[in-house]
Image (tube, rainbow, N blue to C red; front, side):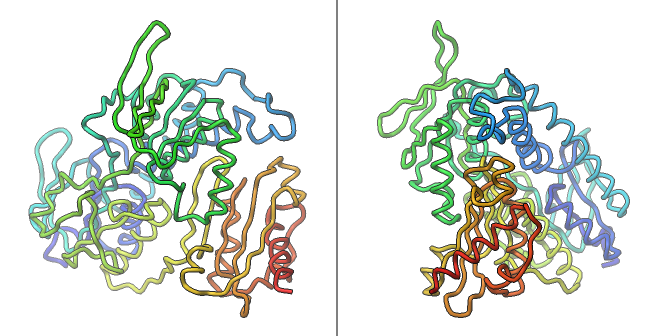
Length: 466
């Protein structure tokens, strides 16, 4: 490796690239990282995960949504909530996260280049400076972690305000009274429920007939029910034909034309129909690489591309495209590149969906177990049955356990409700150690806590066996 300037060059500073760079630096390697934007952190910190989750928290607080079941539907912390109110909190968190990430890279000796990186050949990366000019650097290994960009149909008149993508959320000037969300994937579903909690009349459109099809159907059915309770209109199984901007005496509107002939009139439209790999300008052909039709790279179990010393991690390789899984992929890629043993269990990666209410799952769901022919039983607990659920006012939460009918081994956990993404880790630990449903019966949980749902669900499941 001494023949190269760097042991590892990382393209992209999001969760996957950041973790890969830090891991390699911890192993004593010479690491360089490129980021073409002024701020590091990628979409996760600047336009995606961190902003959306912070907006969600600001929405829940200012709208008084969490307390409405106790104080009534009219309860609110602030009467007239504006985009400025929501963005104030997001700006603070984004600045802090950028500073933390940059400091971590600095103290681990990672050389950060504010430049756009592209391949000259399989071991040479050209750093095109934002200020002009370039420099070529060589590396024994390369990690591609450039993430994705929003899909934009060239026939749609995007203006960033009336018709916009999730990347434009932080630049919105006004909170709409009506919003149409096109695309009911994770991002679309999250923003749809966030705006609905603020009192915005939301229409959610998707050509698929089921929401979030990788989640347990009972959980998604419960989410759909809550969406409708919050006055959302769902147009599932519908496909968008075109979008038009329209202005009359009442103001500016967007007409969303569906292929079924329906027209949805709305104030603003959020276009959230997938994302594509941000690989178009990497000059991948010079490194002997090619992408699929969505700009994504194919990798093996070690995150190696078709060129063994070039790795790809994070959103650029596709599902699940979560910050948590991307970080782990970056760590594993760096360890493999430098022959350092590392172990991970992708089957037990937890998924967190920050809708309102939030959802988190780990392990297998009913559909997967049925398809595999595994005999299982179900145990459930509603938050309203738990003292803590009553205290916090969550009347809709649900925890669901799946376990083997004979061995009683825990097989999967699905949660919808307040704190789901935190609560899931108890189940994840038991799954990792192949524990049984009896663990929850025999364990004493603090009282009152939402964790008690595990005990209640375990008793419910065991009772079904007799």
